[in-house]
Image (cartoon, rainbow, N blue to C red; front, side):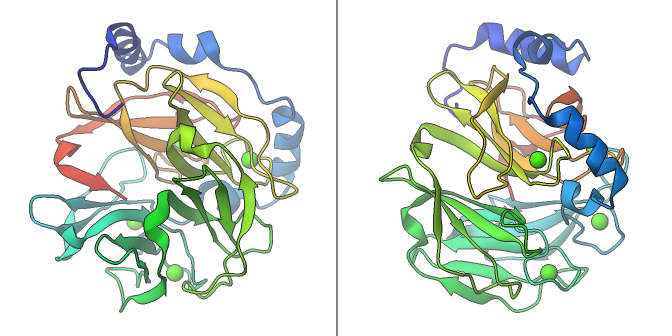
Length: 307
Ligand SMILES: [Ca+2]
Ligand SMILES: [Ca+2]
Ligand SMILES: [Ca+2]
Ligand SMILES: [Ca+2]
């Protein structure tokens, strides 16, 4: 997918149609989650917005933001969301992030109300916890060593149902998908649990939150076999539901990233980047696991690593 020479002409055309709000891709291939509508009613009856969207507010204004590293400088930047799908003025929160080979949003991992991030140090494989303070980040602490064997590490949501944010990671060599149950402190986790297998065949694993609003956080990922994105409905019993195909054409896309409810309509959304045209897309979740449209919201993000 990151190889832009990969044949993807049809997918690229479809992508542009989607950008023009012609919903061919989603309409053609999406399979509706079988229990989505019934459980959406339960969601409507309860205060589940926090579950659906997660915490992506890094500047403390209540609106979801994007964190990204400018790769040329190693600076970490906060791009404040404006609540309607656009950005306010970005600001730099610090330098030296070039030593990290993974930076991910982590929601409120330590339960203090501020969105946090995790990052993996390339030279050591150590995973670091950076607690947000509503503007930048407080002093980091170590989650632990050994994370270099993971091809994906995502966080930001509670997958066990105890109210604490967890980490999910794919072990590259075995394809095992691991769940690390969070303890609510940011840097301590209970014994990991295997929640999936063959995830080495899935890239762009993204902890998008509760996209179908059934009270359980979900993930999406792109299968290498067909470059299509699949929806993995969140677990009620520790395992994800069988994947549902919902969006193809990801041979021309990359950098899927969770972003909370970025347009402020109450449904969790996610980002994706098209490197050929250096465009940043917002996939607007519709509350059923699908997205209603995917407008281009910015350009020039090829030089960034999106957390
Ligand atoms: Ca914000
Ligand atoms: Ca926090
Ligand atoms: Ca869900
Ligand atoms: Ca939304």
